[in-house]
Image 1 (cartoon, rainbow, N blue to C red):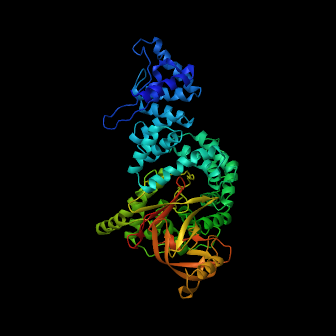
Image 2 (spheres, rainbow, N blue to C red):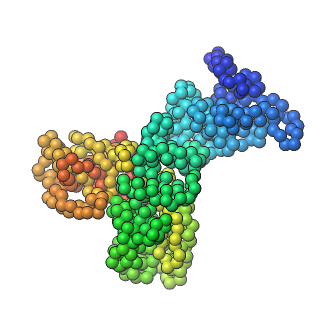
Image 3 (cartoon, helix red, strand yellow):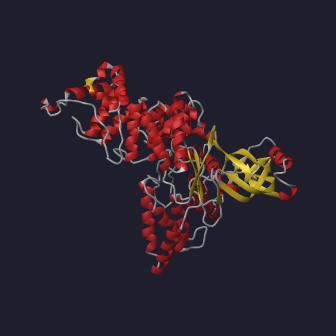
Length: 579
């Protein structure tokens, strides 16, 4: 042991509460954490003697019992020490899972040693899934308390992580303390992390506590999540009245998950009286913003003539959008239409394509087993009508298929309804989720502004402005006053004018707008050439819509970052530069 370590050990000996010095000052060795990857050293445990003494009637070692009692009363240092005992299997059965749970409690209480140890487990996959983002998160919090070993681990991790991973991990770490300072966005993030068990032990009660704080400040994402919790009885008693209250608040702020859920409620008569007109209103709002589940629900309304004139062709249009966005219910419904020739020409191969894709979703994406079972049954029935060559071709097309958009607007997933002629009533699932990103993914950090997200955009390598990400806008939009600035600075010329066109905006309405050609548009490290922008009235919003997003095979927002996730389209050239 170096002189510096001896001094640290002595200092710790003098400052740790006496109630925790259960085995003499030797137990503070648990605070001198060492990680030697080459030697595979374990975290040192506190000194607890008498482990081999016979215990009466199954009682555990008396000193371990003292640790446990203090830990259960909320003493962070005791929680960390108990975690070390479980990690090393000293006086208790060895359990990395129990170690992780006790380290997590100490870490969440702000103990740097607990944060370091939890980061260590996440880095190595002991008792928890190996996760460099969560490891970085906890090392960063420990390093902020001047933990030198944690700072060393951060430097090492940074060299191993992608820029996207690093950006997300840094954002989570910086937001964590802000939650306690009253930041609504940070409070939502902490609640979401607890709800999903990302970097922390899953704890619905703690999730609700932070979501409630955020929602009471008007955060739409938290309002939606709280509505979800009350509807499902997750962390709170099931309460339709409370669910509707919070979902309505979120929907009124244009939160697409909430709009979709309200549309589904009114469509199915769930928690409210059935009202097809309101179902159409909310579903259309969310569908116009590119939200896949709402698009599927809107297709069903047109299919059955609920709240709108029956229109098989319009139903197929919306089913197709949902299906192309990788929505399982939309894929099932579209497959049915091709199999039966409703709204489209009968085509068994195409029916096989969409139905087979629906069967390939896993439970992480489609947690309702009924949807997957419906898809499997539909595929089995369809194959009895097909020739061998048709099945081979359908499988070939399904294997080659890639999604065009993956539930844009939120990183939350919503499972939906299917129309297979059977009872298909199911519950909404709007929990935040993080998915593994596909090959060819670009991640760009964005900034949460109220209920929306903004990202810096550079126009023609000259002027950089913050644009709101909005899939409800069919183009890229700039207000008239910004256009005049671009003209004055020479960034745009009159010769760049493309004339007037009609464009759809987020509420579904269509406006006439003047358009211009932007030679280059840079977003993060992505540079797109020849982008059409539409001009909106002065003081309007700068919108990054489908004119940009449509260049990619799919895109989504990761609320945890927050980040804009772009999935490359192999058929459209995109230049990437360092961000």
